[in-house]
Amino acid sequence: MSDLNYFQTRPKVPPIDTDLYLKRIGVQKDEPSLAFLKKIHRAHLLQIPFENLDIHYQRKIILDINSIYDKIIRHRRGGFCYELNGLLYHLLARLGFRAFLGSARVFQDGSISPEFDHMVVFVSLDEGNFLCDVGFGELFSEPKRLVTGDVQLDYTRYFRFEHNPDGEWLLRKSNDNSLYESIYVFTLQPRQMIEFLPRCNFHQESDQSHFTKQKLITQLFSEGRITLTDRKIKRSLYGEQKELEILNEDEFLAQLQEIFKINVRSLLRQKFN
Image (tube, rainbow, N blue to C red; front, side, top):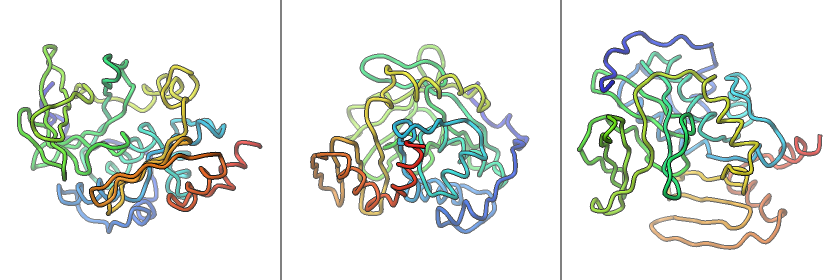
């Protein structure tokens, strides 16, 4: 299925406080449009980090929109793809966008992950059809138009879509518009959040998941990006990169609170309760 225009009915999703959500990301409410979608997408990345901290501080992540909303919007946390893109989908649907969830399989270490390994959001507008993704960590800052062959510049990175031999969509990126690497592959089949539950559980329970191997939080800032793990902190700001080792848990928590404004006491409390 290569055209999202068939998706004319707006999805029915549970009510959430969209005003508080928009306040959290610093965006004024508007009518559905491409300009408004771009504003939401970029603001989401600037205000809400990608992080896997609950996996390491013993709080089970469940795919319940009220629980996710409470964590990210009310308690000003971040999350990973199932939480961030799942929440974005609900916001867009409540604001009147024609949106639905999709499943992507990620290229990593020479192989490709199973179905439902990554959650994305599709949006159909009068201007065209778009892929949104605020839950991959470091990717693109604005939605990408679903057309094959066209190069789409996103600050200093280039993106384009192709079709693989099976007719699936393939997202590729490049730093120089010459050498492209494959990021993930997907179809345009609408999905429900419950379908992602087994893979979500895998990523927080299995020692085969890259999410269980180290703590990670990363966020886009107006000056660039900062990424913190329990091993190092990487600042990519104003076109320059600097890395420093993280020597212990206390230093990790201090950086977590200072840079990302995470409530460290609350995080530790959930681990020991």
